[in-house]
Length: 446
Image (cartoon, rainbow, N blue to C red; front, side):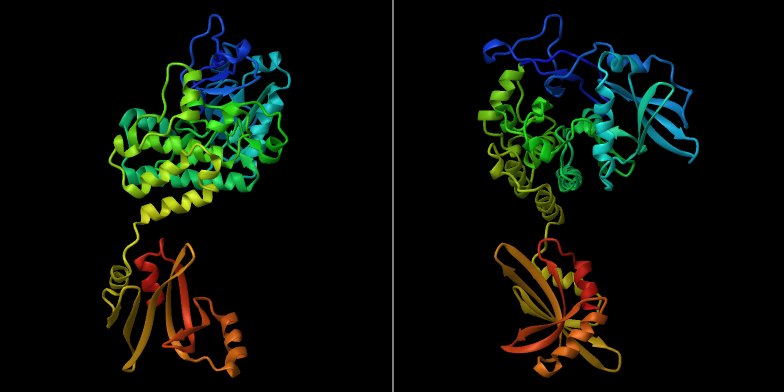
């Protein structure tokens, strides 16, 4: 299963688009005169080809020229059917990234403009801190373009890995968490990305991740109806895709797992000289333990192993769930006593208790004392930390008054809690145990 080249380096920072080829009888062959594609190249079944498509736009002398309301300033990258330039919106005076479709390619494939603009329309409703924003689409001087957010710095994650090597575990986990949040937003909007890889992640000057290149995005309801072409990048594609299963949120999660493995180790979990061999590895070979290739904390290694599970149902149910798991690793939750002592540090008071229940006695003006209880609880698989102070016995005659007060509170709430076996009105705040910070508990104490 090999592809013929239809373009140069993609606008996301690496790889070329190739067409999926199937030899008679299910084997694989290489089209005559074509080189073997790298395993990080994008494949798209049924796409047309134009060997010089990517280079065509770059050589048209667009630099320094005006296109509609845009002044083109510099060249950023090229892909199988478009080039990306840094430009300036003359009306608004702001920089932007302008993705300009190759006019010659459209002459060969008249329907390609609709496909090109489908990318813009698919991502236009995604307004998220970790997604490259689409601002506009249009045509001018016979050229079709997409106006996108310009990301200062503009280095892809792929370029960072090539130049600097593997990332520190917590840095890699944080980037993966940000990408997972972006995917969660896409999935919630009914879309699947289908081409998650380092070349499609831009890094801001502050080091934040922004997911880009929604050129292969498809709506989940369209995929469910079938007939969508196989698309993606072989090294990052989930096993079930090669068996005819439509792309889904969990195939994006698998691709993110491969990306995270690559960030941590500087290598891919599966490599082969032929795409057909690579597919068999994805289908049958267990993913290697990342700890054999990099010093990775056990909790992060376990998360990674779950994202690379062969069966979709064994992966995280959603990108949001994966993001929460990564957040826990990043936060490295303290034991309750350490958390309480850090939260109360510097306050006028003292601490009593042990394990998951502590009393903090705080001094207040007028020689008053305030008792605050910090209590850890579990509800099935969920753990919580509740910070509360006792207001008085939970007399039913005060229920209506307590409800009225709740409507006026902007911080915390009044609830009923059993204290030493008796129901009491308490002022409380509850936090997820695995992500609460000492600063959160301190704010609640004060």
